[in-house]
Length: 558
Ligand code: AYL
Image 1 (cartoon, rainbow, N blue to C red):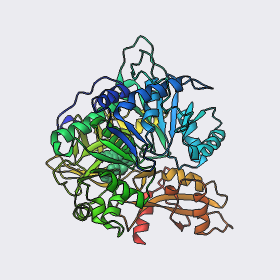
Image 2: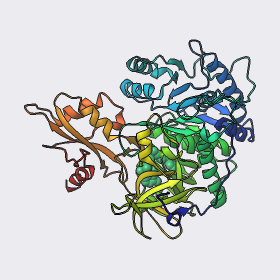
Image 3: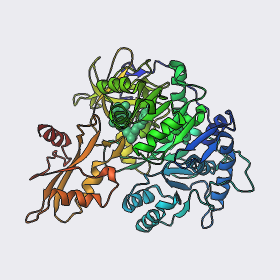
């Protein structure tokens, strides 16, 4: 019997979509083909390297050919390619080459240390890894650490799989029946017709509501659906936000779901030019906007605050901006309005998670409804749930106006975490994904995210899993126990910094700096512990779970 009554669910006020049953690559390639072949699709703001709409298909076909015949190990159905690279014009080429061969793409943060990368290499079972020259040594070390036999390739060199060669390429991607990877890793039998919703395409990593980063299984169907959902919503509700000559900003990382789907692929299917940057550096960021006349910029709240408040930002540098899209972290009403006024452009919020490919809501009210995450994208349902021990399911529906945990359902929801049936069962209930976010909804269907109840810490829109830092701290010989929570960053509302509560073993001594240095040497910079509090014990529930709420309250008390 279904746990949730249909009455309590909210449906999208923007109708439904009927996504085609196509592979992600076929879908994207068909859209790309509709645009001017000579128009730049991606432009690297630093190197000036470009990829036109017309160059995309032949390059993918050629890259696929190279991957298929990769020297030590051929890539094919059932193989996983890990792309470990900053944003570059070759990123989508490598991505679709792997998909066109029936493989799966996982993506990792290029700033990972070898030990962080090793975890993902073994967890996702990568057979091939593509990186750029500067990160080759890190990848090599990570492969050794993980004990994997993955083949390493380098993007952007003469021997790269993404360069044009003399022999060109055909530019078609029809997948032969059976040439693809099913959910769970096995290969679909040759006789089965293609089913986009059961065929695995991407494996980005997310810690979800609890624990360590996990591979989020996103199918071809999930990715196609979410692009259709976001694009159709904007087309139906805000057609003025879709210009013929839009120039978008590709600053946010393509390894993260926001950069991968909502920026890179949205730009590609719409036919905009995407100006890419490999990292955030104030000067090159402002120069890229001014030089390329960027008019739509997808950003995260700390970057919006930078544009609104930093003295180095002069109005003429950003005069081309017409619309800023904010997502991946909260943006409160006051900050949103202030930023819109100061920057002199509209600020529109989106909300979602890696597990939902990622978009669930977009604020499509003209001018932006301050503080709102927005309305559900087409074909998406939601309900707000409150824990209720008296109910058989353990939950009841929130009363009108009451806060509750947001649960969502739609074709963009993942089928589960890779090789983690336990975590999958905790996160997916009756086809609804539990977001771990607390929301309210008004009578126009505008959702407001008011709190986060999952463990997850957000640093500049990126995920930091407390469990990972706690596990690391426990490997220190002087640490008896540890609990890590996000501490609100006073200067950038909505942003957090990891704060560690540490219990020392008897007769040991350790300073806060010893703790921060220990962590700093082992994980990427954005995960570094910023503050340490030594405590006699970590508050825990009867079942041994860290009471993070208690720790967060302690930070508020100061
Ligand atoms: P992940 N307001 C508040 N919290 C948010 C918001 C928002 N607008 N967007 C994301 N979050 C938090 O997997 C929330 O806690 O995906 C959510 O569960 O790295 C978590 O971030 C998910 O983190 C969009 C829509 C970008 C989505 C996204 C990327 C979501 C980041 C642009 O338009």
